[in-house]
Image (cartoon, rainbow, N blue to C red; front, top):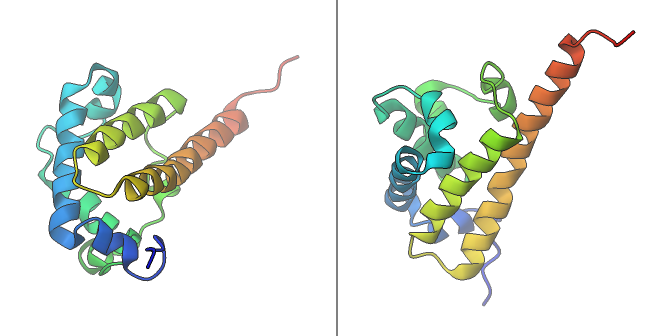
Length: 144
């Protein structure tokens, strides 16, 4: 029987549940520390990544259909507005997705789940960029 990712807790289970998601997130931040293209996005994070790791792993647990651990500890979140204070453009989103792709590739996930996951993560990354671009347009005075 084929797994339908995105339905119920199928993605959460495919990611290894809470422990597997924590491994993914720890790998993600390790790549963020190491990859030259991630220098700008790493600088947007605190030196100590403990809270960042906690927040992202808790968020991804709920986002993949598992327990809503983020909201239990931190409250509700809307991803694009939560990142609106940061200078995130296409390059930053691309760097974030690159770190995540490396982290996903390092996991023992099924190939189809790896493709599904990075495709789905590109959606909120794109929404963050769109929000930033719309805000920048609204703040730019019209040309004469």
